[in-house]
Image (cartoon, rainbow, N blue to C red; front, side, top):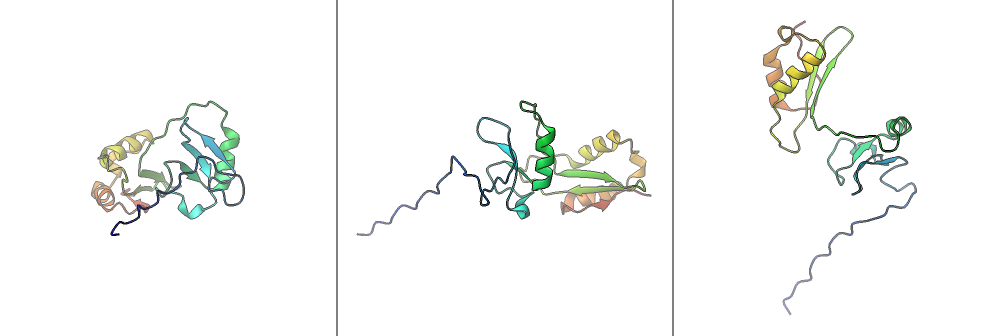
Length: 148
């Protein structure tokens, strides 16, 4: 007859039963009324990737630790910042920049300057050419940016 069957819409579950196959793991902390939350996962390799309905996934041990620290109705502020700064025991400064999945025009150098100020690191101790390279590369790897 020439007609094609309409593809089936994927079923969106409104309830997830407890058990070993539950993708929320053993820990779930709701953030809003729409089901957005922070939870452990039965698929740790998925942590850090944008593959769920905007929830934040954690490894089970960290989720259990957080769950036991947070009280019901604690205000939550989620900050999206695909930029990390770390300082090791020798005062070496490392920068990680990840791909910005929201493409919301983050100003990497400006964010780095704010983080450096927060941790009392002098701008003159930083290799700004290296900062630019890391910002452009967005490889998500810790790269030393200190001159020392």
